[in-house]
Image (cartoon, rainbow over all chains, first blue to last red; front, side, top):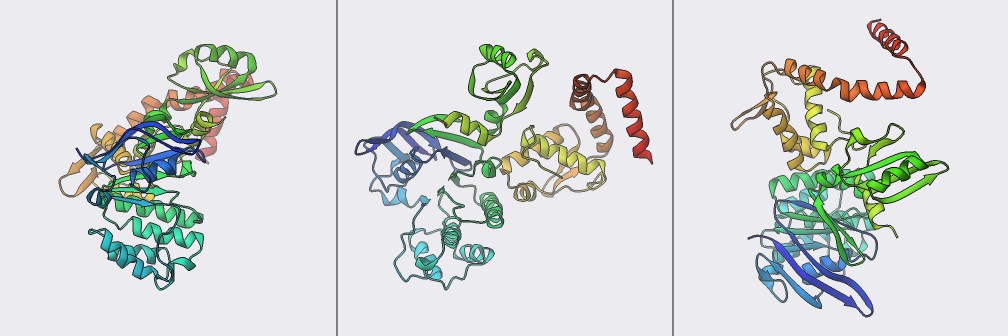
Length: 283
Length: 125
């Protein structure tokens, strides 16, 4: 069975429990969203899945093999992380050649094509790139590795709206050509809401929720109306959060709703993925 | 075709309706080919599975049909089918929200009907 599987994985850094007993799977042919607030443990999870950090407890396997000290398993994984690990003085075009040594299926032609789409000069030195340009460079590598499991940690850091738009389109094109497993971790949730088939929400090192994006969105509602009416309504429909503006109250509800049983004084609207995320993960 | 992520309906339904709109206005004529799911998913930056779900829905309803190796085409009689389908959903989608707002404003059914008639006349001019 082709998949990445985490079983009861935990990791602490000193006193901080970064990841606590997380079990999950990712399969090729799907685009996943790994969402969490700052410090929720997303990067630690990604670093463990790609063998950069070892778990304290639990197992991580790729297609049935452990990722720890395993070159064959590592060759199937690519993490576009927050930092560059390229030697000083290396130029973009040399970095492409370098990547090809680690990833036998690396598509240099595609990497150059993507760099061109982003208007990147491949003669530039990697260390001299601005945040946005560094992101474009690393995306050009990530989308060309040919690896069956690709992890993108903050893939649009420093990109303007036009370049973000371009990236999402390039990602879909690449996914259509190579239906690999893509795991995207980002704070720009609404921008990827239509792209991700399944969403994982991490809170304080634990897996809070795993669901198909479509099903999750189908269950999220905002109910707005006079305070008394909303309070009465949430007695039967537990809310995940509430906001009040004078005598008007909104309750956020995750669950099924029988529209015919909603009183006329209440307005019902859908929650989008970002609103759901905020309600589920705020303090 | 227009996809609005603020829209409350699932994206695959919006894709299906976008194609229906294209059929109704003649942008996708009967027996003509519609864009591929790849084109749709790249254009709207959505998961290809979602685009496929929207297209498949219309194929199940006989509004589109598949030509092996070529892609999806608009079926004969698709315009009639789309209109039928939209009429069936007209009350829930359009009349009920209008009624609700009219009641909130204290408009009588007669006053509301008069406004609708006036709107029809304006459209004709």
